[in-house]
Image (cartoon, rainbow, N blue to C red; front, side, top):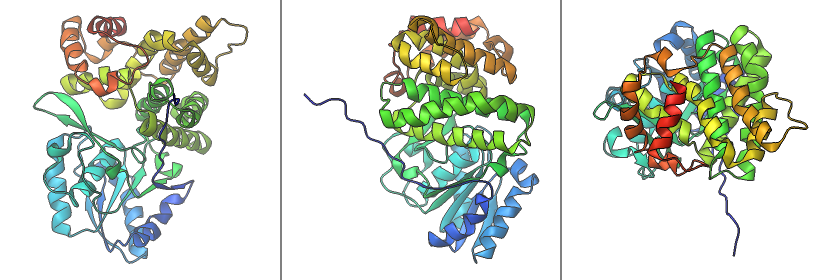
Length: 386
């Protein structure tokens, strides 16, 4: 009988390094772009990053229309006005500049410019039929890894939950990862997005769908977060730390694109949907508690996570070494100022049953968790986090 067969994809061209943002015009022209639709947000625009982008596009003869009305933690309904603006502009290229919200919005708009219907029609896995117009994504935070993933996440008000469009057809044509774009990210956002990166890497590394190829990226992402996140939060102008975190986010994105996420994201979606807790904070807060629960599923891997986060595990039993992974995660989380308990973000015990009920519906993520989780056990994780 054949062994496990893993599929591994990195379909996007990646331009990486300080100053790589300057390549956006040349890449847009190579993709055939003559009129770009730039999706960003007011903060990025205020920082002057959008104007820099427009100059690079203009230098290559590409006209641009800018859209900055992107919602933080965007709703699925927010895609329609953005799409309408893109169609009115007659664009043949979409450029997303910002954090996960701008990049996910860009993915949806680029896809819908080449597919019928509306964004709501594509919530789910594998529903997109074909690629849309060419797209370039440029992250300004080191967190989601959205510039490389086949996922776009949106709030659906009708069910008070987060749902995703998942398809290889929404992966951008080019990802430009320039750590200089992250230098102005404030400490709290740096912390939440950085811990989100750690969540991606840990979940991918320990997932049912993990593979030796994805493990390379996941474990290195964990090591980079452990090495650089504290410095990036404490001194945001430290380019070495920003570079390390940009790589961590990108590697984490590759890891989840190939191995997926699991229990952390499944439990976090209802927190975001029902209580509007941001994606990064929800994942960051829950991560150590899920790690405590999942550690028994693979003592060796969780021991390696502890080691990658800087814990000395030589001479320890496998069980003790594995337990150190969650401890190291909690310490890092505390050091960068992440809330440690659900009560700190307004969750009370009366909310737990509704959170569990909604979380258990995210079956695609539970199927990827390394340890089976019953509703009772999911409730236990949330109560420990309370």
